[in-house]
Length: 276
Figure 1 (tube, rainbow, N blue to C red):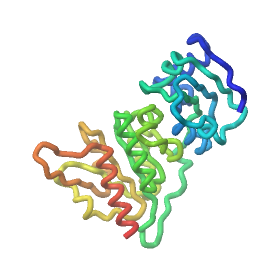
Figure 2 (cartoon, rainbow, N blue to C red; figure 1 turned 90 degrees about the vertical axis):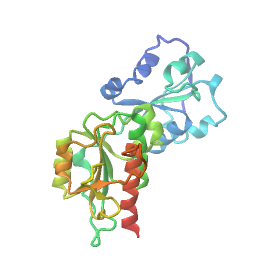
Figure 3 (spheres, one colour; figure 1 turned 135 degrees about the vertical axis):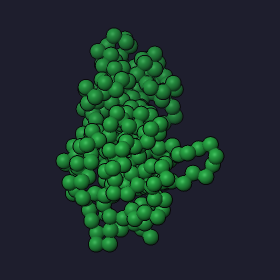
Figure 4 (cartoon, helix red, strand yellow; figure 1 turned 180 degrees about the vertical axis):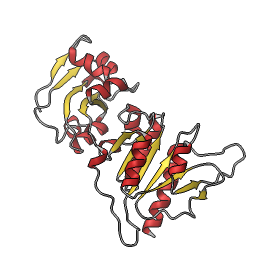
């Protein structure tokens, strides 16, 4: 690792560029994002992502080994020490841990995904999660975390979905967005892809016309579709579905689950059916 160089001014071009990455439009435009804290930075390195630069602030560093956090990083990566004021400018959290990296986003294309796996009994075939219109970064991150844990091949973020590299999405995913493909598509593109790959579509709905999710066959190549919390899935998604799934709600004041919770419930029913 190169010896760190000090930066003390907010007018420094590196600081100004990094601060812009707090905004989604600048992350999308630049293809970069901020990894904040030792866990996120170390996991970005472990995932093989390219670090453009690293900022450290010894004055606010928590009790962790900086060399351990940066283990495996390209030794030529530019590193800088910054003041407490600057680290707070760069950080998204109110209590920065003194380590921030600017990282190149991984890129995935829908036509680069592997052909869906199909076993003779359908038990261990490919599983996908489709997040439609997810506006809360924490929800998207939590869904990606669950999808990774459940062995999904990819998450397709459709419609007006939040940026997967929003700091809250990264944190809620526990960095799963670094390794699991999260691909943003229009609804029609996603449906065309699923149809073209013979992947069955299972659309979640609070409506009474859905099958109880535990009664449906969730084996074989399958995409589980979770809609926006306020409006649910559009008629286009419901019409495209091979099966509609309902999760029973037994309370008197709640008619549906949080989107991330609904994704976890149905994904793990699919896992249960594939491993029983």
